Every structure is written in C-alpha cells, then in structure tokens.
Amino acid sequence: MEQLTVALLAPPDAGLTAWNLDAEHPFPEINDKPHTILFKLLRRWKCQAKIKLQKYTSTYVVPLINIQSNSGVQVPQLLNFDPRASTLISSDLGNLTELGQFFTPLRYLRVDSVAIVRQPQPIPFYVTRWELGSQRSRQAYFTMLGTRLGTFLAHLHGHRWQQRGQEEASHIEGETTDLEERIRRLHQNLMVARDSRQFPIDQLDVEEAIDKAIAVLRADISRINHPDE
Amino acid sequence: MDLSSILVDMPDNLQDSAALKMGVISWARASLRGRGLDGDMANLIGDLEVHRVVVDHHRQVGLLRLGQDSPYDFEFYHQALVALTESIIQAYKKNSDWLRKLPKRSKVNKDFMVEPGAFGRIRNRRGYSTSLLLLERSAFLTVGFRLLESAFENTFLCLDPMCNLPDGTHTPTQRDCVVVQKILKRGSWYLKRAGSSYDDFARKLNRRAIKRAWQWDGGRGEGRPWLPRLFSRPDHKYGD
Image 1 (spheres, each protein chain N blue to C red):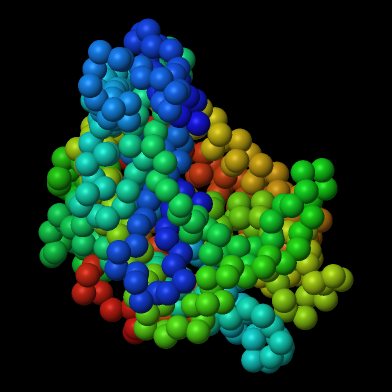
Image 2 (cartoon, chains in turn purple, orange; image 1 turned 180 degrees about the vertical axis):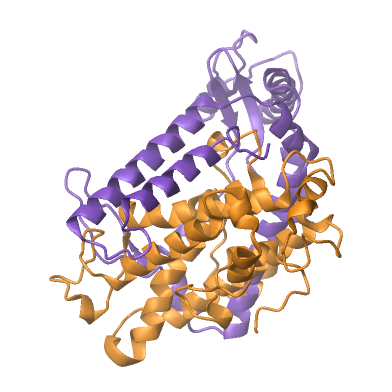
C-alpha cells in the first residue's frame, strides 16, 4: 500500500521511483525516518500542487481550502495536480457516511444494471437506534449539520474568488451540455406523460405551457440570454 | 450539490454530536462560475423538497390507511428534514453576503414587491452583475426543474394502498400515484411562479402568491415551500 501511495503521489518531474517503506530507506544519507520524509515530501508537493493549480485556473481556487476552518466542514485537501495528465489527487476525509444514505428508505434504488429492480431499502441501523433517543437530541443533531453546511456554503458563495469567477470565467461547455441534455430529457418525459395521460398534470398538460417552461429553463442555463443582463 | 456530496458522521449515540466530523466532496463537478444561491443552494433545497413530498404524503395518510405495522417512522424523517432545512436556510441567510448586505428597508425587501421604476436602481445597488430578484427567479427554476426531473428519473417509496400497487413497489410510470403527482404539482408550482419572464416574476400579484403560497399543494403554515424562506426578510412571518 505504501508503495502504491508513494508512486501515485510522486510528481512526474521528481525522478523518484516507488519504494517500500518497510524494506528500504529511500535516502540513506538522511537521518529522518522514512515516514517523516514522506510527510515532508507531501507538504512540498502540496505547495507545488497549489501553485500549479493556481496558475492553471487563474487565481480563484485555493481559498476553498481555508473556508472549512470557519464552518466546521472539511473538504478534501489538494495533494497533487498534473494538468498534463489531467490528474488531481486529493486526501480522503475518513470514514464518513453520505447524508443521502439517511434518506434511502424514502427511495427505491436501481439495483441491477441489466434490469431495473426496485425494492424497499432497509432502514439504516443508526436510524433505528436514534429512534430510541430523545427528540431533542435528534433535532440538535440535524440542526448542527444544517448550521454547519449553511455557513460553509454561504462563505463559499460569498468568497471573492467565486464572485470573480462569475465575471471572468468563460462558458463551461461540458456543464452546459449536460444540463441541456437533462432539460431535453425532461421535455420528452413531460410530452410522453401528457400524451399517454399517465400523469394528470393540470398545470403542465398544455403543450404550450411545457414548451414555455423548457424554453425558460434553457435560457436560464448560463444567464447569457437573460434579457436583464 | 446534492445530498450524496455531503458526508457526515452517523454516530450510535446522538449525545456526542458536538465533536462530529462533516465534509463536502465531489468538487469535480463544481462550477467556477459560482452559481451559488441558484445553483448549490437551489439544488439542495430541491432535493430536500423531493424527500419532503414522500414524507408529507405518508404522514397525511398514515393514521388512516398505513396501519400500525409500517416499519417507517415518517414523523422521524419529517423532524429530520425540517430541522436540517431550516437550519441550512437560517445559517446561509446569516452568513451570506448576497442576502445579508441588502439594506433592510428598500422596495425590494419590503415584501418583495418591486415597483416598476425601481428595477434598475435595485439591480445596480451593490455592483453585482445580477440582482437578488434575478437570482431568486433562477433558483425557482432550478428547484422546479429538480422536482420534475426527480419525478421521472428516480423512484420513491409509496405505501399508500390507494395506489393499488401489485407488489408494493412504486415506479415512475405508475398511473395515478399520489406521491408522483404531488412531486409534479410542486415542481410545476415553482416553474409557474417563476413566470415566463423576469417582469412576470417581479409582478406584485406574483410576489404575493409566493409569499402566501397560493396554489401550493403542501398546505399552509409548516407545509409552505422552503425556497421562498431563503429570500424572505429575517423578520418576515410565515404563520399568517
């Protein structure tokens, strides 16, 4: 595992090859222990990666790392970045659970890749345990999550680099194409639903209304076509 | 941003929640253009609204039709959704430059009823390229889109025996399923309130409809839509 980690983290121009930390010392002339060297190298590469990323993306990415300290929300640390190889390596946040998993019992998931199989999802074990706890402690837990997240997002969206990003960054082709594709799919679904009368949609059952809603969504994708800007 | 981008500690004992770790991932899809209020926040609220439909419906029919043997505690999910969403909105409003720096007494903030002559002045007030009303309308569109898209592309729990589901499962193509209809109704409410243009959205009647949740499927009081709370004044009362 150490071999793999070191090989992955070695910058391409460093000239280092992978080594086994338990078997051999990478630099016998240095008195530091191998793990200390690894940490020092990691620190140095982090600095290099930040500089590279800053150059690559103009100026407004790195402050993201500092926002987490104000809100109690962590983000993956940047470890290495290679624009030539289109590779970005970041740290792991540890053993945490997706918040979406808490709500999986309210959904059915696609289980099989060939056929769509829907079946009730089991209730997560922590939910069944929490039901035994007091309502007050449960409320405090979710309030704490929401407060941290709201603070984090507000700082993130209000940061100078974000606002500069609005003004300076050019049209992001991939994102817009993706959204256009999603809107096109929604349009098709709405029309099929209207034709087959699967959904008695009283507000969207007229073709003109659907077309209008889709046109407005398309115009909103990039705000470029908005009449007020 | 959606719920799968947020990582949290799920402890066995909630009493120790003060020292919990929390993280946000999936920055590969983050946009440098910074669609904040009408991007991350609107998508997040849209996701929460979708789950809220499922919970609301089962809470409403629970006593009448579901019976005592249902393994799901919908009151519990309701508490979680409400606490999570309200605290996100409150914390965001408290810390957001976009929302906090607006002057308290202005034509845009007073019940959000903008008079026609005030558009240009409000839009240029803080040097931002977009006005708050423009962002709000964009957020309405995003939430509406999210709800409609979810109705077709995801599947939801439906234990309502009125749906007559053959095997207890629920698909998006299920005709007359109340959960799906409610998701569609709420999604179309957001799109309808967004209007076909910025002027439609800023119209006095539309602002009043948003404030009082006219034609909203979820009822009054606690059941009102969540997104307008994000843009309301701090002292604005929703209980009327």
